[in-house]
Length: 100
Image (tube, rainbow, N blue to C red; front, top):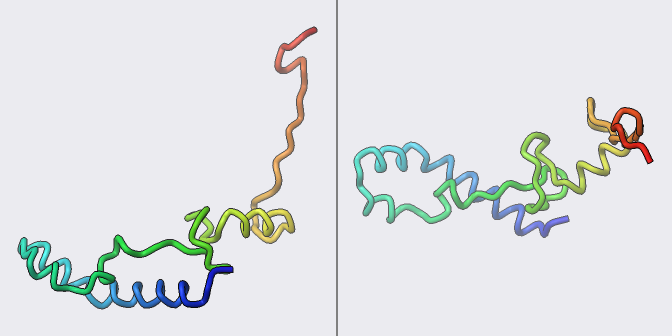
């Protein structure tokens, strides 16, 4: 579980990005880079970090599901994610044409 302060910081950044999105787009279109530099740093969408919706973990994030790989594995093992199941390797030597 990520620290509460890190999760709160990401929420704050997301709010700033949303607040300054139109102004940032207008300044970019005008080519006013001095005006862009005067905006808050956290209003830049590049500073946002994807985080797991359940644990807040930032590394190993899976975009398709919105959760980290660890959480994904646990949920998939318990069958909590529809359409996802653990794969099994079944080796058929005749199919692979491996004869000893």
